[in-house]
Image 1 (cartoon, one colour):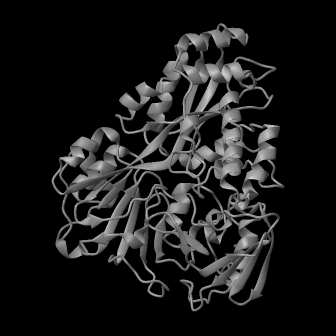
Image 2: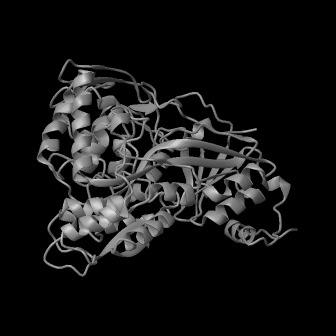
Image 3: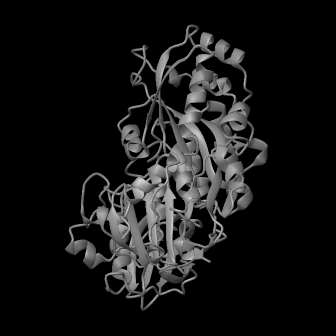
Length: 529
């Protein structure tokens, strides 16, 4: 009898070219799908964090009133249909006969409960409901979402709003999200989705199996899906090449040519909707890691512009990204509603201009500050930040780069442990309003604005334009307002847009998947041939 070797041992051995003992063929279930990703979902609670790794993963387990199809268009999920209530809100007609994975019936009480949970102070997704004034149950399968003003984007804005069973959550003490505390929903799940969690070892592996009681027709043919988080890119690639995994993402860009030429391997390349950017500390507090006290140099637009013009994006795209990215001049990509190509221009790379600006601002000799970056969230995130650190050093800025895993990254940013930071943003609504609301609006908990505006950027005119463009039905007038916001952001150098992130997936050639620009990996479209 052959000795069973752990998956982690085999992955590490494959990464360094060591032969391992193969598992018996009988243990390799024909329809088992094994995939690896860069990071483990931080939680199974769908209202605890507003991050793509969590929301993308949980879209396989939980469902909302609506969902996005293969073409990213909104379609019915737990709601069969919906219609506007004039200027007052939206009515949703719920799907009848739906069961949760624990056997409970789905109805309007679960929608109301999930809304109250997701819009609570403990929720990281409460900003999705900033426009909602009230939710009313009309009958067991009809729910009204009443809004403070006309909101034509509302169905799009709740595509990732996931529904929990009220009774299950209350019985297990999970009435509120586990954003800042541990509760049952953090490590356990009970959705209505196509797959349910069979077992979970945090940061080791999660096993999903099809939910036999799912209301929809399955398009997949897998009987078991095993997810393994592997932070080291070389190990992920080695696991794919050795046959330990069927699918991995993201792929190191330098490995794309080799994988394309590897027998039995397919590479799927696209463009994500995500824009990578740098943010600043905009408040008057002392910087987190600086030799300047009593003031914040980044409050001076000239300093922010000096940083911007010191960054050579052409070099980063060519060398660090291997030509697999598009330079960005806005915080939205061409895939978004509200994108204006005429405004999508970057400030020129000009180190001498950066030096002049620093001197004009009173920092001819530069100054020290801390740059926070993740090392396992975006493609080549640490390498990009390392390159930027060198570029800023060339104009006299002493950058102390601090990289941390994404599981700790958001906590550090929310604790103000940064002077400048990296952020990637993919609008959940595929509309320019989304990043304006989350990243640019003056932070306001009561109004649920600016929840990801870590640097606390604020502009009074933008705060006036945002509610106006949220309710404007005339496309031309709305676009004019969006353009004004983007012009203000560019002129004030609120952020430094870097690039639109590429999508690079690799798989064994008997696997078929659907790649969407939001980089959500949807298991219900996976087939093992």
